[in-house]
Image (tube, rainbow, N blue to C red; front, side, top):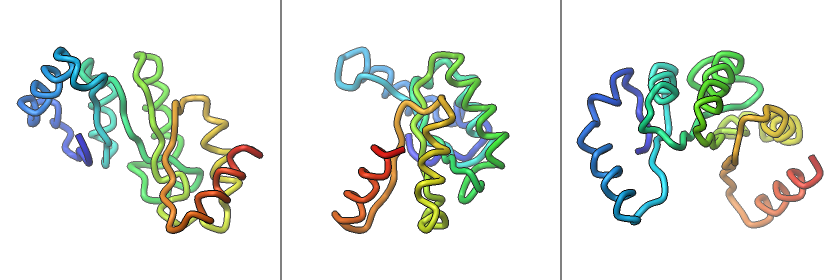
Length: 137
């Protein structure tokens, strides 16, 4: 489920969650979860046994995130402790860290809580540059 923001999303979207649960039981999908776009939604995802994977916004300057990095990292650590997969988003702060890419990548990799992360690019050359930077970090 993409872009959950409500603190009560686990109740509000129970029907959608049930559909995903059924799809998993049938082998159509392997896991279910959400991307969170508020600290309240992120906290609810951390507590929900239904969430197996969460996409969370994280970068060293708190750009386009749900709260400051320290607060978000503490919730993500709770998720990892509960056995959830965590995928980082907004690693470059939606472009705000475009001139500080190495710092942002090192930060994401240093957390020890991300199973993967996404970075949007505008060109193949930009993507190749980021791949080189990640390998070097």
